[in-house]
Amino acid sequence: MSAHTWQLVAIVIYFVAMIAIGVWSMGRTKNKGDYMLGGRGLGPVASALSAGASDMSGWLLMGLPGALYAAGLVELWIAIGLTAGAWLNWKFVAPRLRTYTEVAGDAITVPSFYSNRTHDSRGLVRIVAGIIILVFFTFYVSSGMVAGGHFFEASFGTSYLTGMLIVFGVVMLYTLIGGFLAVSYTDVVQGLTMLVALVLVPIAGILHLGGPGATVDAIRAVDPDALQLTGGALTTMGLVSSLAWGLGYFGQPHIITRFMALRSSQQAAQARRIGIGWMALACLGAAATALIGVGVYQRNEAELANPETVFLDLGMLLFHPFVAGFMLAAILAAIMSTISSQLIVSSSALVEDIYLGITGREVSGPVGVNLGRVAVLVVSVAAALISVEPSDTILELVAFAWAGFGAAFGPITLLSLYWRRLTTAGTLAGMITGAVVAFVWGRTEGTGLLELYEIVPGFLCGLVVAVVVSLLTRPSDRVEAEFDEAVALASRRI
Image (tube, rainbow, N blue to C red):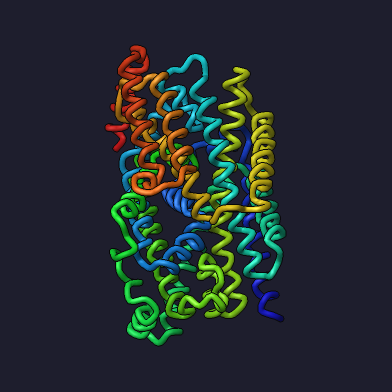
Protein backbone atom coordinates (compact mmCIF):
# COMPACT_ATOMS: atom_id res chain seq x y z
CA MET A 1 0.00 0.00 0.00
CA SER A 2 1.08 3.57 -0.59
CA ALA A 3 2.07 5.84 2.30
CA HIS A 4 -1.12 7.83 1.99
CA THR A 5 -3.21 4.65 2.11
CA TRP A 6 -1.50 3.50 5.34
CA GLN A 7 -2.06 6.91 6.87
CA LEU A 8 -5.66 7.00 5.74
CA VAL A 9 -6.31 3.58 7.35
CA ALA A 10 -5.00 4.94 10.67
CA ILE A 11 -7.16 8.05 10.40
CA VAL A 12 -10.26 5.97 9.61
CA ILE A 13 -9.59 3.77 12.67
CA TYR A 14 -9.35 6.91 14.76
CA PHE A 15 -12.59 8.34 13.35
CA VAL A 16 -14.44 5.07 13.95
CA ALA A 17 -13.24 5.02 17.57
CA MET A 18 -14.47 8.56 18.18
CA ILE A 19 -17.89 7.87 16.66
CA ALA A 20 -18.15 4.62 18.67
CA ILE A 21 -17.59 6.56 21.89
CA GLY A 22 -20.32 8.96 20.76
CA VAL A 23 -22.75 6.07 20.22
CA TRP A 24 -21.84 4.54 23.60
CA SER A 25 -22.42 7.89 25.31
CA MET A 26 -25.74 8.35 23.57
CA GLY A 27 -27.14 5.37 25.47
CA ARG A 28 -26.15 7.00 28.77
CA THR A 29 -27.59 10.42 28.00
CA LYS A 30 -31.15 10.59 29.25
CA ASN A 31 -31.77 14.24 30.09
CA LYS A 32 -30.46 17.77 29.68
CA GLY A 33 -28.16 17.50 32.70
CA ASP A 34 -26.53 14.40 31.19
CA TYR A 35 -26.20 16.02 27.77
CA MET A 36 -24.69 19.27 29.04
CA LEU A 37 -22.68 18.19 32.12
CA GLY A 38 -22.51 14.41 32.10
CA GLY A 39 -24.58 14.14 35.28
CA ARG A 40 -21.60 15.45 37.30
CA GLY A 41 -20.00 12.02 37.04
CA LEU A 42 -16.45 12.64 35.80
CA GLY A 43 -13.54 11.16 37.74
CA PRO A 44 -10.22 12.98 38.22
CA VAL A 45 -8.44 11.30 35.29
CA ALA A 46 -11.25 11.96 32.83
CA SER A 47 -11.72 15.51 34.10
CA ALA A 48 -8.00 16.35 33.95
CA LEU A 49 -7.34 14.88 30.50
CA SER A 50 -10.59 16.25 29.12
CA ALA A 51 -9.78 19.74 30.38
CA GLY A 52 -6.26 19.53 28.96
CA ALA A 53 -7.27 18.16 25.57
CA SER A 54 -10.13 20.61 25.15
CA ASP A 55 -7.84 23.44 26.21
CA MET A 56 -4.90 22.85 23.91
CA SER A 57 -6.60 22.40 20.51
CA GLY A 58 -4.69 22.58 17.24
CA TRP A 59 -2.60 25.28 18.90
CA LEU A 60 -0.55 22.63 20.75
CA LEU A 61 0.52 20.64 17.69
CA MET A 62 0.31 23.33 15.01
CA GLY A 63 0.15 26.88 16.37
CA LEU A 64 2.77 26.58 19.13
CA PRO A 65 5.29 24.46 17.17
CA GLY A 66 4.87 26.81 14.22
CA ALA A 67 5.66 29.87 16.34
CA LEU A 68 8.64 28.14 17.99
CA TYR A 69 9.94 26.91 14.64
CA ALA A 70 9.85 30.42 13.21
CA ALA A 71 11.22 32.37 16.20
CA GLY A 72 12.84 29.95 18.66
CA LEU A 73 12.29 29.44 22.39
CA VAL A 74 11.26 33.06 22.95
CA GLU A 75 7.77 31.91 21.93
CA LEU A 76 7.71 29.39 24.81
CA TRP A 77 6.66 32.10 27.25
CA ILE A 78 3.07 31.62 26.12
CA ALA A 79 3.23 27.96 27.23
CA ILE A 80 4.86 28.98 30.52
CA GLY A 81 2.10 31.50 31.19
CA LEU A 82 -0.56 28.93 30.29
CA THR A 83 0.89 26.25 32.56
CA ALA A 84 1.02 28.65 35.50
CA GLY A 85 -2.52 29.83 34.80
CA ALA A 86 -3.81 26.26 34.53
CA TRP A 87 -2.26 25.33 37.90
CA LEU A 88 -3.84 28.35 39.59
CA ASN A 89 -7.18 27.52 37.97
CA TRP A 90 -7.17 23.95 39.26
CA LYS A 91 -5.95 25.07 42.69
CA PHE A 92 -8.24 28.00 43.43
CA VAL A 93 -11.21 27.72 41.08
CA ALA A 94 -11.91 24.00 40.61
CA PRO A 95 -12.82 22.85 44.17
CA ARG A 96 -14.81 25.94 45.12
CA LEU A 97 -16.65 26.13 41.77
CA ARG A 98 -17.65 22.45 42.03
CA THR A 99 -19.18 23.12 45.43
CA TYR A 100 -20.70 26.52 44.71
CA THR A 101 -22.50 25.43 41.53
CA GLU A 102 -24.47 22.92 43.59
CA VAL A 103 -25.28 25.49 46.27
CA ALA A 104 -26.31 28.02 43.60
CA GLY A 105 -29.33 26.14 42.31
CA ASP A 106 -27.36 23.17 40.94
CA ALA A 107 -26.19 25.26 37.98
CA ILE A 108 -25.04 23.20 34.97
CA THR A 109 -23.61 26.02 32.82
CA VAL A 110 -21.25 28.90 33.52
CA PRO A 111 -23.87 31.60 32.72
CA SER A 112 -26.49 29.88 34.90
CA PHE A 113 -23.98 29.81 37.76
CA TYR A 114 -23.33 33.56 37.44
CA SER A 115 -27.07 34.19 37.32
CA ASN A 116 -27.93 31.94 40.27
CA ARG A 117 -24.95 33.20 42.25
CA THR A 118 -26.20 36.81 42.11
CA HIS A 119 -29.93 35.91 42.12
CA ASP A 120 -30.57 37.73 38.86
CA SER A 121 -34.36 37.75 38.78
CA ARG A 122 -34.59 39.10 35.21
CA GLY A 123 -32.23 36.56 33.66
CA LEU A 124 -30.07 39.23 32.03
CA VAL A 125 -26.80 37.76 33.30
CA ARG A 126 -27.34 34.37 31.70
CA ILE A 127 -28.58 35.92 28.44
CA VAL A 128 -25.59 38.29 28.12
CA ALA A 129 -23.13 35.57 29.12
CA GLY A 130 -24.73 33.17 26.64
CA ILE A 131 -24.40 35.72 23.84
CA ILE A 132 -20.72 36.30 24.68
CA ILE A 133 -20.15 32.55 24.57
CA LEU A 134 -21.78 32.23 21.17
CA VAL A 135 -19.85 35.17 19.68
CA PHE A 136 -16.39 34.13 20.81
CA PHE A 137 -16.91 30.37 20.49
CA THR A 138 -17.97 30.78 16.89
CA PHE A 139 -14.50 32.21 16.22
CA TYR A 140 -12.88 29.58 18.44
CA VAL A 141 -14.63 26.66 16.74
CA SER A 142 -13.69 28.26 13.44
CA SER A 143 -10.00 28.14 14.42
CA GLY A 144 -10.30 24.38 14.88
CA MET A 145 -11.97 23.90 11.54
CA VAL A 146 -9.26 26.00 9.87
CA ALA A 147 -6.66 23.75 11.48
CA GLY A 148 -8.54 20.68 10.23
CA GLY A 149 -8.61 22.05 6.70
CA HIS A 150 -4.87 22.73 6.72
CA PHE A 151 -4.25 19.29 8.21
CA PHE A 152 -5.90 17.35 5.39
CA GLU A 153 -4.47 19.71 2.79
CA ALA A 154 -0.89 19.07 3.99
CA SER A 155 -1.32 15.37 4.83
CA PHE A 156 -3.37 13.98 1.97
CA GLY A 157 -3.29 16.65 -0.70
CA THR A 158 -7.01 17.32 -0.46
CA SER A 159 -8.37 20.80 -0.90
CA TYR A 160 -8.57 22.94 2.23
CA LEU A 161 -12.37 22.97 2.00
CA THR A 162 -12.63 19.17 1.77
CA GLY A 163 -10.46 18.71 4.85
CA MET A 164 -12.39 21.30 6.81
CA LEU A 165 -15.71 19.63 5.96
CA ILE A 166 -14.44 16.17 7.00
CA VAL A 167 -13.44 17.45 10.44
CA PHE A 168 -16.69 19.40 10.69
CA GLY A 169 -18.77 16.30 9.90
CA VAL A 170 -17.10 13.83 12.27
CA VAL A 171 -16.91 16.18 15.27
CA MET A 172 -20.46 17.35 14.81
CA LEU A 173 -21.69 13.75 14.60
CA TYR A 174 -20.24 12.38 17.84
CA THR A 175 -20.89 15.61 19.75
CA LEU A 176 -24.47 15.82 18.53
CA ILE A 177 -25.38 12.25 19.45
CA GLY A 178 -23.34 11.74 22.63
CA GLY A 179 -23.24 15.16 24.31
CA PHE A 180 -20.94 15.95 27.23
CA LEU A 181 -20.02 12.33 27.97
CA ALA A 182 -18.96 11.74 24.36
CA VAL A 183 -16.93 14.95 24.41
CA SER A 184 -15.24 14.10 27.72
CA TYR A 185 -14.33 10.48 26.96
CA THR A 186 -13.17 11.19 23.43
CA ASP A 187 -11.05 13.91 25.04
CA VAL A 188 -9.39 11.28 27.25
CA VAL A 189 -8.42 9.20 24.22
CA GLN A 190 -7.37 12.29 22.32
CA GLY A 191 -5.31 13.65 25.22
CA LEU A 192 -3.39 10.38 25.54
CA THR A 193 -2.88 10.24 21.77
CA MET A 194 -1.48 13.79 21.76
CA LEU A 195 0.88 13.07 24.65
CA VAL A 196 2.29 9.86 23.15
CA ALA A 197 2.86 11.60 19.82
CA LEU A 198 4.58 14.59 21.44
CA VAL A 199 6.96 12.25 23.25
CA LEU A 200 7.74 9.95 20.31
CA VAL A 201 8.32 12.59 17.60
CA PRO A 202 11.12 14.45 19.48
CA ILE A 203 12.80 11.18 20.45
CA ALA A 204 12.76 9.97 16.84
CA GLY A 205 13.93 13.40 15.66
CA ILE A 206 16.93 13.39 18.00
CA LEU A 207 17.90 9.92 16.79
CA HIS A 208 17.49 11.08 13.19
CA LEU A 209 19.90 13.97 13.75
CA GLY A 210 22.50 11.77 15.46
CA GLY A 211 21.88 12.28 19.17
CA PRO A 212 21.33 15.18 21.61
CA GLY A 213 24.66 16.90 20.92
CA ALA A 214 24.29 16.73 17.16
CA THR A 215 20.72 17.99 17.48
CA VAL A 216 21.79 21.07 19.45
CA ASP A 217 24.57 21.76 16.95
CA ALA A 218 22.17 21.46 14.02
CA ILE A 219 19.73 23.92 15.62
CA ARG A 220 22.43 26.44 16.50
CA ALA A 221 23.89 26.23 13.01
CA VAL A 222 20.59 27.58 11.69
CA ASP A 223 19.91 30.07 14.50
CA PRO A 224 22.36 30.65 17.37
CA ASP A 225 19.57 32.26 19.43
CA ALA A 226 16.93 29.58 18.83
CA LEU A 227 17.56 27.93 22.23
CA GLN A 228 17.41 31.20 24.18
CA LEU A 229 14.32 32.06 26.22
CA THR A 230 15.32 35.70 26.06
CA GLY A 231 16.86 37.61 23.20
CA GLY A 232 16.54 40.44 20.75
CA ALA A 233 13.14 39.24 19.56
CA LEU A 234 11.65 39.42 23.08
CA THR A 235 10.37 42.78 24.30
CA THR A 236 8.93 43.64 27.70
CA MET A 237 5.51 44.09 26.13
CA GLY A 238 5.88 40.75 24.37
CA LEU A 239 6.85 38.97 27.59
CA VAL A 240 3.92 40.43 29.52
CA SER A 241 1.55 39.55 26.69
CA SER A 242 2.82 35.97 26.51
CA LEU A 243 2.57 35.35 30.26
CA ALA A 244 -0.86 37.01 30.30
CA TRP A 245 -2.31 34.05 28.39
CA GLY A 246 -2.49 32.38 31.81
CA LEU A 247 -5.13 34.91 32.90
CA GLY A 248 -7.50 33.45 30.36
CA TYR A 249 -8.00 30.15 32.19
CA PHE A 250 -10.34 31.60 34.81
CA GLY A 251 -12.86 32.49 32.12
CA GLN A 252 -12.79 29.62 29.62
CA PRO A 253 -16.25 27.97 29.76
CA HIS A 254 -15.14 24.76 28.01
CA ILE A 255 -12.45 24.24 30.67
CA ILE A 256 -14.18 25.28 33.89
CA THR A 257 -17.25 23.17 33.07
CA ARG A 258 -14.92 20.19 33.67
CA PHE A 259 -14.58 21.41 37.25
CA MET A 260 -18.37 21.53 37.57
CA ALA A 261 -18.62 17.95 36.23
CA LEU A 262 -16.31 16.39 38.86
CA ARG A 263 -17.94 13.80 41.10
CA SER A 264 -16.79 15.79 44.13
CA SER A 265 -14.64 18.80 44.96
CA GLN A 266 -12.16 16.55 46.80
CA GLN A 267 -11.07 15.09 43.47
CA ALA A 268 -9.79 18.48 42.25
CA ALA A 269 -6.34 18.04 43.83
CA GLN A 270 -5.71 14.68 42.15
CA ALA A 271 -7.05 16.00 38.85
CA ARG A 272 -4.75 19.03 39.14
CA ARG A 273 -1.65 16.85 39.46
CA ILE A 274 -2.66 14.72 36.49
CA GLY A 275 -3.68 17.70 34.36
CA ILE A 276 -0.61 19.84 35.00
CA GLY A 277 1.72 16.86 34.51
CA TRP A 278 0.08 16.16 31.15
CA MET A 279 0.27 19.82 30.17
CA ALA A 280 3.94 20.25 31.09
CA LEU A 281 4.98 17.15 29.13
CA ALA A 282 2.85 18.14 26.14
CA CYS A 283 4.24 21.69 25.97
CA LEU A 284 7.83 20.49 26.31
CA GLY A 285 7.18 17.94 23.57
CA ALA A 286 5.78 20.64 21.29
CA ALA A 287 8.82 22.84 21.94
CA ALA A 288 11.24 20.00 21.27
CA THR A 289 9.39 19.08 18.07
CA ALA A 290 9.66 22.64 16.76
CA LEU A 291 13.35 23.00 17.55
CA ILE A 292 14.19 19.61 16.06
CA GLY A 293 12.28 20.76 12.98
CA VAL A 294 14.67 23.72 12.75
CA GLY A 295 17.59 21.29 12.70
CA VAL A 296 15.97 18.95 10.18
CA TYR A 297 14.51 21.47 7.74
CA GLN A 298 16.85 24.41 8.48
CA ARG A 299 13.91 26.77 7.97
CA ASN A 300 14.02 25.90 4.28
CA GLU A 301 10.77 27.13 2.73
CA ALA A 302 11.15 24.68 -0.13
CA GLU A 303 10.93 21.76 2.32
CA LEU A 304 8.58 23.28 4.90
CA ALA A 305 6.44 26.02 3.40
CA ASN A 306 4.15 26.37 6.43
CA PRO A 307 5.80 26.42 9.89
CA GLU A 308 2.52 25.30 11.50
CA THR A 309 2.89 21.86 9.84
CA VAL A 310 6.31 21.09 11.35
CA PHE A 311 4.95 18.36 13.67
CA LEU A 312 2.97 16.84 10.83
CA ASP A 313 5.93 16.82 8.42
CA LEU A 314 8.32 15.35 10.97
CA GLY A 315 5.85 12.57 11.75
CA MET A 316 5.62 11.59 8.10
CA LEU A 317 9.41 11.80 7.68
CA LEU A 318 10.42 9.78 10.75
CA PHE A 319 7.86 6.95 10.99
CA HIS A 320 6.33 4.14 8.97
CA PRO A 321 3.25 5.51 7.18
CA PHE A 322 0.85 3.52 9.40
CA VAL A 323 2.50 4.78 12.59
CA ALA A 324 2.71 8.25 11.06
CA GLY A 325 -1.03 8.00 10.48
CA PHE A 326 -1.57 7.81 14.23
CA MET A 327 0.83 10.74 14.66
CA LEU A 328 -1.40 12.61 12.27
CA ALA A 329 -4.39 11.46 14.30
CA ALA A 330 -2.82 13.26 17.26
CA ILE A 331 -3.25 16.53 15.38
CA LEU A 332 -6.84 15.65 14.67
CA ALA A 333 -7.22 14.78 18.34
CA ALA A 334 -6.00 18.21 19.37
CA ILE A 335 -8.29 19.91 16.89
CA MET A 336 -11.39 17.83 17.45
CA SER A 337 -11.24 17.70 21.25
CA THR A 338 -11.45 21.47 21.46
CA ILE A 339 -14.11 21.86 18.78
CA SER A 340 -16.37 19.30 20.47
CA SER A 341 -15.96 20.88 23.91
CA GLN A 342 -16.78 24.30 22.54
CA LEU A 343 -19.79 22.98 20.66
CA ILE A 344 -21.31 21.41 23.76
CA VAL A 345 -20.79 24.63 25.77
CA SER A 346 -22.30 26.68 22.93
CA SER A 347 -25.24 24.30 22.82
CA SER A 348 -25.72 24.76 26.56
CA ALA A 349 -25.57 28.53 26.16
CA LEU A 350 -28.28 28.49 23.51
CA VAL A 351 -30.65 26.13 25.29
CA GLU A 352 -30.01 26.59 29.00
CA ASP A 353 -29.12 30.28 29.03
CA ILE A 354 -30.43 32.27 26.06
CA TYR A 355 -33.61 30.27 25.37
CA LEU A 356 -34.48 29.83 29.04
CA GLY A 357 -33.50 33.40 29.88
CA ILE A 358 -35.74 34.86 27.16
CA THR A 359 -38.72 32.53 27.40
CA GLY A 360 -38.54 31.55 31.06
CA ARG A 361 -39.54 28.01 30.02
CA GLU A 362 -37.52 25.12 31.43
CA VAL A 363 -36.89 22.16 29.12
CA SER A 364 -36.06 18.69 30.39
CA GLY A 365 -35.90 15.04 29.39
CA PRO A 366 -35.65 14.10 25.70
CA VAL A 367 -36.87 17.56 24.64
CA GLY A 368 -33.90 19.22 26.34
CA VAL A 369 -31.48 16.75 24.76
CA ASN A 370 -32.93 17.29 21.29
CA LEU A 371 -32.81 21.07 21.65
CA GLY A 372 -29.16 20.72 22.64
CA ARG A 373 -28.50 18.71 19.50
CA VAL A 374 -30.16 21.32 17.30
CA ALA A 375 -27.97 23.97 18.95
CA VAL A 376 -24.82 21.94 18.21
CA LEU A 377 -25.85 21.80 14.55
CA VAL A 378 -26.52 25.55 14.37
CA VAL A 379 -23.18 26.58 15.90
CA SER A 380 -21.28 24.02 13.79
CA VAL A 381 -22.72 25.36 10.55
CA ALA A 382 -22.05 28.99 11.52
CA ALA A 383 -18.41 28.24 12.38
CA ALA A 384 -17.97 26.23 9.19
CA LEU A 385 -19.22 29.14 7.09
CA ILE A 386 -16.65 31.46 8.72
CA SER A 387 -13.94 28.86 8.05
CA VAL A 388 -14.57 28.52 4.31
CA GLU A 389 -12.08 31.29 3.52
CA PRO A 390 -9.93 31.88 6.63
CA SER A 391 -8.29 35.29 6.88
CA ASP A 392 -6.31 34.72 10.11
CA THR A 393 -3.79 32.14 11.30
CA ILE A 394 -4.83 29.48 13.81
CA LEU A 395 -2.93 31.25 16.58
CA GLU A 396 -4.57 34.59 15.80
CA LEU A 397 -8.08 33.11 15.91
CA VAL A 398 -7.35 31.28 19.17
CA ALA A 399 -5.74 34.36 20.74
CA PHE A 400 -8.75 36.50 19.93
CA ALA A 401 -11.31 34.09 21.40
CA TRP A 402 -9.12 33.23 24.41
CA ALA A 403 -8.78 36.92 25.30
CA GLY A 404 -12.50 37.53 24.88
CA PHE A 405 -13.46 34.80 27.34
CA GLY A 406 -10.65 35.55 29.76
CA ALA A 407 -11.57 39.24 29.92
CA ALA A 408 -15.35 38.75 30.06
CA PHE A 409 -15.61 35.80 32.45
CA GLY A 410 -12.27 35.55 34.28
CA PRO A 411 -12.85 38.44 36.73
CA ILE A 412 -16.47 37.36 37.29
CA THR A 413 -15.47 33.78 38.08
CA LEU A 414 -12.91 34.88 40.67
CA LEU A 415 -15.19 37.48 42.23
CA SER A 416 -18.10 35.03 42.33
CA LEU A 417 -16.02 32.53 44.27
CA TYR A 418 -14.03 34.83 46.54
CA TRP A 419 -16.03 38.07 47.08
CA ARG A 420 -19.44 38.08 48.72
CA ARG A 421 -20.24 41.66 47.59
CA LEU A 422 -20.57 40.85 43.88
CA THR A 423 -23.97 41.94 42.56
CA THR A 424 -26.03 41.34 39.44
CA ALA A 425 -25.26 44.84 38.15
CA GLY A 426 -21.55 44.37 38.82
CA THR A 427 -21.55 41.04 37.02
CA LEU A 428 -23.26 42.46 33.95
CA ALA A 429 -21.08 45.57 33.82
CA GLY A 430 -17.87 43.58 34.31
CA MET A 431 -18.69 40.99 31.65
CA ILE A 432 -19.70 43.53 29.04
CA THR A 433 -16.74 45.80 29.76
CA GLY A 434 -14.21 42.96 29.58
CA ALA A 435 -15.64 41.57 26.35
CA VAL A 436 -15.90 44.96 24.61
CA VAL A 437 -12.43 46.13 25.64
CA ALA A 438 -10.84 42.85 24.52
CA PHE A 439 -12.77 42.88 21.23
CA VAL A 440 -11.92 46.50 20.37
CA TRP A 441 -8.31 46.33 21.57
CA GLY A 442 -7.73 43.14 19.61
CA ARG A 443 -8.98 44.76 16.42
CA THR A 444 -6.89 47.94 16.89
CA GLU A 445 -3.43 48.08 15.38
CA GLY A 446 -0.70 50.25 16.79
CA THR A 447 2.62 50.42 18.61
CA GLY A 448 3.66 50.81 22.22
CA LEU A 449 0.87 50.01 24.68
CA LEU A 450 -1.46 48.93 21.86
CA GLU A 451 0.87 45.98 21.22
CA LEU A 452 -0.17 44.53 24.58
CA TYR A 453 -2.26 41.36 24.31
CA GLU A 454 -5.89 42.41 24.63
CA ILE A 455 -6.61 40.07 27.52
CA VAL A 456 -4.64 42.33 29.89
CA PRO A 457 -6.62 45.57 29.44
CA GLY A 458 -9.85 43.60 29.04
CA PHE A 459 -9.34 41.61 32.25
CA LEU A 460 -8.27 44.64 34.30
CA CYS A 461 -11.11 46.86 33.04
CA GLY A 462 -13.68 44.12 33.59
CA LEU A 463 -12.39 43.52 37.13
CA VAL A 464 -12.38 47.20 38.11
CA VAL A 465 -15.82 47.89 36.65
CA ALA A 466 -17.35 44.80 38.31
CA VAL A 467 -15.98 45.83 41.71
CA VAL A 468 -16.95 49.50 41.41
CA VAL A 469 -20.50 48.81 40.21
CA SER A 470 -20.98 46.13 42.89
CA LEU A 471 -19.88 48.60 45.57
CA LEU A 472 -22.44 51.08 44.27
CA THR A 473 -25.18 48.47 44.55
CA ARG A 474 -25.96 45.85 47.16
CA PRO A 475 -26.42 42.05 47.08
CA SER A 476 -29.37 40.57 48.92
CA ASP A 477 -28.94 38.90 52.30
CA ARG A 478 -29.75 35.60 50.60
CA VAL A 479 -26.82 36.02 48.20
CA GLU A 480 -24.42 36.65 51.07
CA ALA A 481 -25.83 33.72 53.05
CA GLU A 482 -25.33 31.37 50.08
CA PHE A 483 -21.78 32.66 49.65
CA ASP A 484 -20.99 31.84 53.29
CA GLU A 485 -22.60 28.41 52.89
CA ALA A 486 -20.56 27.61 49.76
CA VAL A 487 -17.29 28.79 51.34
CA ALA A 488 -17.90 26.78 54.49
CA LEU A 489 -18.87 23.67 52.51
CA ALA A 490 -15.81 23.97 50.26
CA SER A 491 -13.53 24.35 53.29
CA ARG A 492 -14.91 21.18 54.88
CA ARG A 493 -14.50 19.18 51.68
CA ILE A 494 -10.89 20.14 50.95
